[in-house]
Image (cartoon, rainbow, N blue to C red; front, top):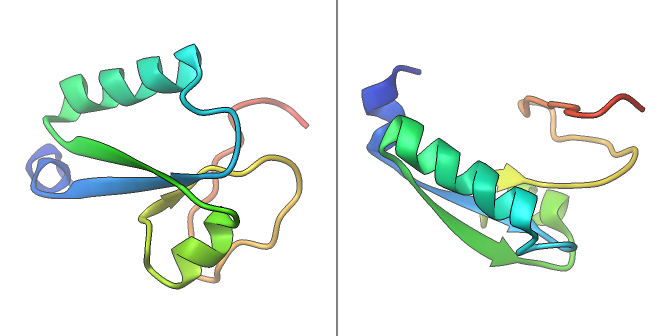
Length: 79
């Protein structure tokens, strides 16, 4: 996906914990500045379920999880 394609969408980030923490707000701000896209934060009890139901585009989760088949996963910190 190129920069223009990313900027064409509002990205819905689902989370259940810790937001808005300073690091999360900084990451969202950097993403928005770098891509021209916008991010809407959505608090939900189960971010993965919200992702499966397409209520959010990005699920922020902690620990081990079973991602949906077509999902990409990123582990920013070693486990």
